[in-house]
Image 1 (cartoon, rainbow, N blue to C red):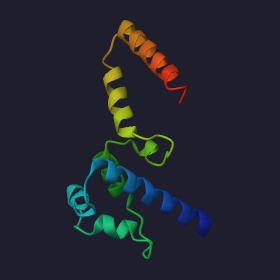
Image 2 (image 1 turned 120 degrees about the horizontal axis):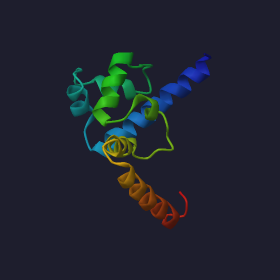
Image 3 (image 1 turned 90 degrees about the horizontal axis):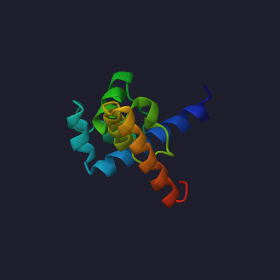
Length: 116
């Protein structure tokens, strides 16, 4: 991995972390403490003057904190992966008929939204 690629990944990590943190409405300090880190942990991760990347286990804690699957964390095209993941978990509990109804509702909503 080149240095440019590494910096691109770090910038994406910071963008996504800040997006999810702001959506959740929590401070960097509160988030840091909630994931079991020192109060300045998130501030250090997002500081552009310091090249910090979280350890893998801490990345999993961050994903869990936001309710985001690690594979979805870096997908900027998904606005609210936490809500999508919660919906998917509930879909597993439905019968075939219920799933067909949900699918029909989603189809109508997608059409109303212009196929977004």
